[in-house]
Amino acid sequence: MTLIDGKKTSSEIKAEIAEEVKNMIASGKKAPHLVAVLVGHDGGSETYVAHKIKSCEEVGFVSTLIRFEDNVSEEELLKTVDKLNNDADVDGFIVQLPLPKHIDEQKIIEAINPNKDVDGFHPVNLGRLVAGLDTFVSATPAGIVDLLKRYNIETAGKHCVIIGRSNIVGRPLSILLSQKGIDCTVTVCHSKSENLKEITKTADILVAAIGRPGFVTGDMVKDGVTVIDVGTTRVKSDQTKSGWKLKGDVNFEEVSPKASFITPVPGGVGPMTICSLLKNTLKAAKK
Ligand code: NAP
Image (cartoon, rainbow, N blue to C red; front, side, top):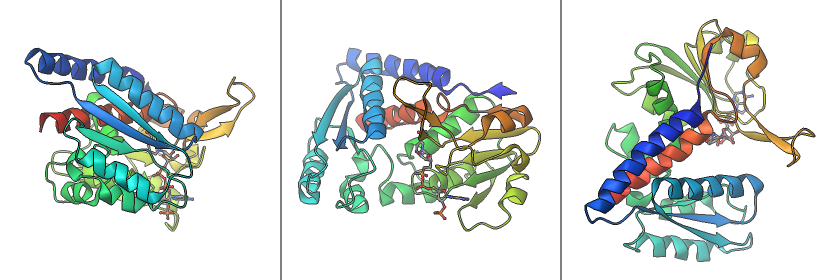
């Protein structure tokens, strides 16, 4: 079994991005600028945004964090999006999800200029992905494909089963993996799927993007499977200072002995997601 080291791979990619940024600046161009908009004080969101800002610094980007309290109005948030859309100094920006219930997330996503939508959540960018056109691919699916490529995991003709059909992970990943050049045969499963175990047992590559810790058990996979665990759920723990730890959707103890490749949680998909965001920002800056 090979452990897929997302931390190491993301460090390599970050070094490549940093080199490009150095060259851009040396040739008189400005450093790429990413803005993150954070609403409220959700622990997970705070951590993700802090990682994103730190990663920007590591590769030589300029980064700005705009914070709002939980009670910010949808109107004020839309005004900020509009300002960022029209700020020539900003190459790309993200509005960290989830947003408080009184704000319509989809409305915010659709207000973002697709050319600055470095999360790749805007319907225009999702649509371009479906059509096989150049786009900002959403960060987690792009990171997963990078991991498969960098670990030389064969995808052509392989059966990839994805559990989860969200617009940010499962759905775009299914499109990406079935594209020409990657050539997987893809099955997408969800909460209404019947006989899930029979389907997952046929997977050469199994992706779990559900948000249910330990959902995928040893009896759900075949020998030699490649397992990508996207799940990141905070569960209570008395072994950590913070009082919680991150758990993936895969029961690692049961599944890893059967796997040929597997991602850990943390340290698998998570760091790659940030890398893809940096790549998209670099691409936006070049445009
Ligand atoms: P989501 O929007 O809640 O979607 C979850 C998907 O899982 C849905 O399609 C749902 O089916 C499916 N599902 C739920 N219960 C199921 C069951 N019993 N059997 C089969 N399918 C089931 O979640 P998400 O945003 O895609 O995120 C999924 C997980 O990935 C979360 O833990 C999240 O924190 C994590 N995540 C990690 C990263 C990273 O960078 N590492 C990035 C994004 C997300 P229905 O559609 O039928 O409801």
